[in-house]
Length: 464
Image (cartoon, rainbow, N blue to C red; front, top):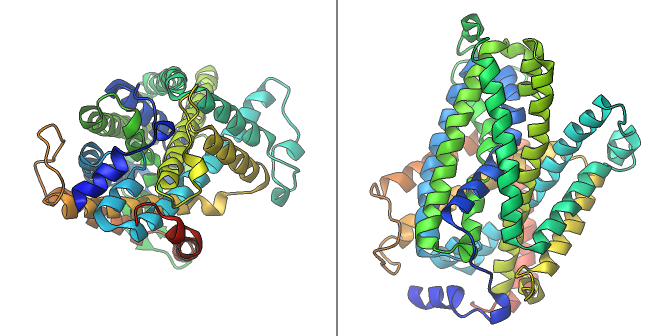
């Protein structure tokens, strides 16, 4: 039965429902780096250090990195054995059936859609700051949504539409753009490292753990290394997006595991170095700013280097949106092909080899959300959605290890079932440290998704 389901999902697609295989392991690694390095390193490092962990934010990154490593190995195994472009949605379909797969897919739609809009808002702020520095800043009416006293966040809306156009052209062209932007933002990080490493004051690292491992303050705020880990986890969101490219990888059994694991290792090392230097050159209490890396360089007397880093931030957030947008459209493509969403969303344009209709719909909706909505209160929903997907993927590895078709070319981690079990435990713990309001919003979204399933998806499923 399992082999039959795999055949149905991965082989018997119509010609106009197949994607172009053109991505190498290097392309996939850069795809992961393009999505991972962004908001986390440029914004959340300073915020988590100032509000949750102090200099021990280094340990927060390590804790989140370990949780992601266990999940990454599980993703790597399922991406090479199950395949498909739906990421956790596709793996869950094979492991647990259609209803659980729909719930996971519904969570991923929320996770990626809200992530893109939130990052677009952050990008807009940096972009307008650059314009202000040149004396041509936009008025508040064009940079804030109505809820904050403006008319529309115009830069946030326009950047999403520009990325929409890029994805319509084709994934290979998008991958070329991503390579350039990754090079720009990695260069910005290297500039920071080069200047900061000679201006470290070891006294800034004392006390190293001012809030301990975990503590709840009288006002209900959670602090400590583990609380910081639940915040900076957002910095790792993105490596799972690599698995959505399974149907566009030249050799998915070999290239997907490499892309997932290599991008995670590279970004974890960069995060630890930057976190150590950032808290070493500036007292952690001063890092609660929107651009802590640029702020630190200006603080130690290098304003021109700070400006270069800001340019890197603008490039970095653009690549994050590109990869998140790409992943979102591929998940919708997979769900549509299975009949859980309208089948017209899985049609691929023969000229560009991309699902143009899906890309257009996503672009218009997310551009509208980013332009007219303040998404600060929804940012933590991205974390809880991602962590829940990681837990289910780890469960899927345990379930499918002895039931799936065996292939000597399939990536299989040597520490089964220890790795997926540790992934379930670590990701679940990070979910526990998230605020109760986040859990309430998350459960409401799940209930809406269950209603959608029985109203439409169950009746139109192709594989049920």
